[in-house]
Image (tube, rainbow, N blue to C red; front, side, top):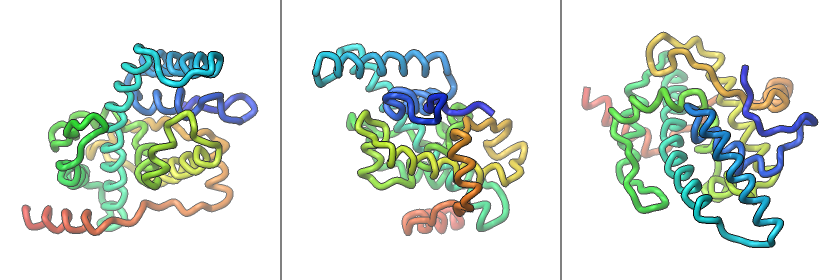
Length: 232
């Protein structure tokens, strides 16, 4: 199983792991070549800043950063879809991909990204794009489980080891939760090949019996689920 490449051979985080490597792979899971190119570019940018004691991105890095932010805003919606699928399985004993997509699309309608643009979150678009992100949705479900402050920090160069560890533990929980379910041939998870959390983190979660479950629903989600039932 391929692992997210953010740890060195001694299992310590690679330099700028969260910002340069993790972020790019999770934003472009459907294009490894693009992810690696962007990661190398952002890594070199941070090295340049430190060497010259400068702040602020170069023009090319600014454009790359905007691309990453836009992809992240879409990817996180698919993490929410995945979390909804797990919660629906916990409650109903079955995967309800369309219901999960509907709930996320409904809740995202009024949200905007960092550039003031409305998120593309209609049902048809989410269903179509899900296959591009499905192998990293456990990471984005973990992102959704962080506080707002942690979300703003986890993919930046100021992310510390403690926050990175928390994020990866949450991602391992969601990955293992999904692996315990025999995914059907339909329902969005056909041919699921998750990009794995580093094995040292997975082993920690398993050996310490960290609770493998999904997160509780918010009141807004329950309200939307009631609307969904009425619409049938």
